Length: 312
Image 1 (cartoon, helix red, strand yellow):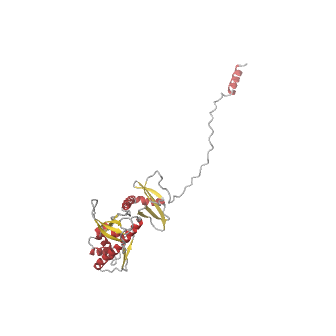
Image 2: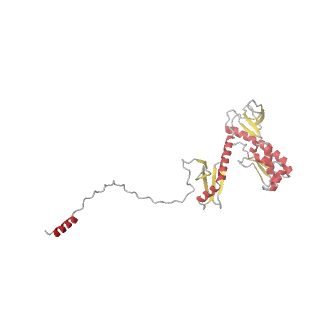
Image 3: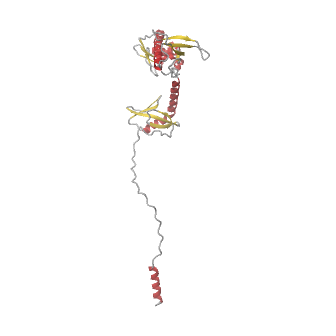
């Protein structure tokens, strides 16, 4: 065969030969069928979110809390109430922080207002908690030998079933103090030794209210001529935070629990309410009227802020 023809055949045989076999890639394990992704539904924030979870330590929590925010390094859970009003209002009481806001106000705006007042809010919450703790400590355990403040001193209860006290149900007596303490006045109540706490409390309150009615009338008659006013009617109140009130018709309301304070403090409240019969506001003229009969009224008024009156 011609050499050129052989070369051509060799070339074509070489090109037409099958390529070397390739190694097959390893088979991958079968994958689980992929679940369809749930759509991401964005919800508008509600007043009931978010609340601090169990892993977060809530320092101040309102019993009706619907939202929580970290203020000054402490967690504050507060209630949000929608109302017909134009601005955001805050109230701090024994239960904690409550917020009242217009219906159109967003939660982000509420949070911004609270963050701006964070220092004031935390300080007031702490003061409220301390005051509540102190009041709880002054709660009276109504039983024989219970002690409570009376006109700036201390009064001890004694159950005396042998005495009828038919006229008033209770009577004051002097008690000799021993080595455990000073002399204490005793209030002897005509109740059996197994009387319930409610019976003892009610009998004591009835006696205190009778004493308050008589004492308040005496002090009103003492200061009214000095202030050149005339009061017409006295009634007793049991308000938690208000010690007295006056109306332009001359009627006066005084809290019977003032009997826990010393007489100068009671006189301040009496003079304060009588002064309202001349000036029905708290203008400088009003305070000048109070000061005309009681120059040291600021010191007496300050003592009312000391929560010495026990819880009933």
